[in-house]
Length: 116
Image 1 (cartoon, rainbow, N blue to C red):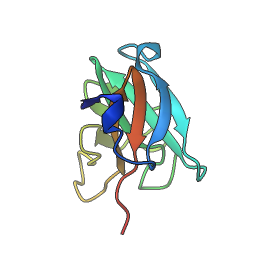
Image 2: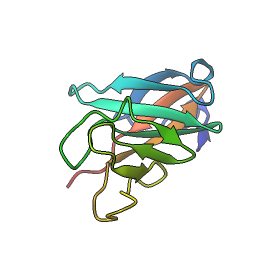
Image 3: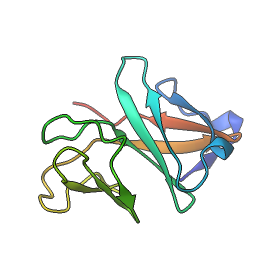
Image 4: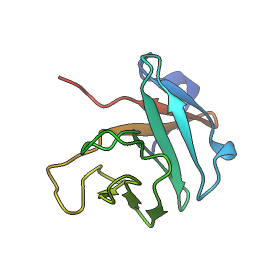
């Protein structure tokens, strides 16, 4: 995950996600984007991952799903997703949109995925 200096803040599309130190390994939290969508932010083994908080299968919230290593399980139907790339482990074409995570002066920022 990139660590940026204040002078390199890339754009205004970034979403503030709080202080990095406030989300210890094993922690998770919801971040709300200006448009209202919710983003699940996870700290797994000291690395931050952010993904849309909606299962692409039926729209269930992923926030309460179990996460072991880098696999997040949908609490509604049990589908499993790799949090490194958003792919469903059983059906790679099924994806959860991922947000890029950045640390800038100790603060977490999320860059939304590109949408055509």
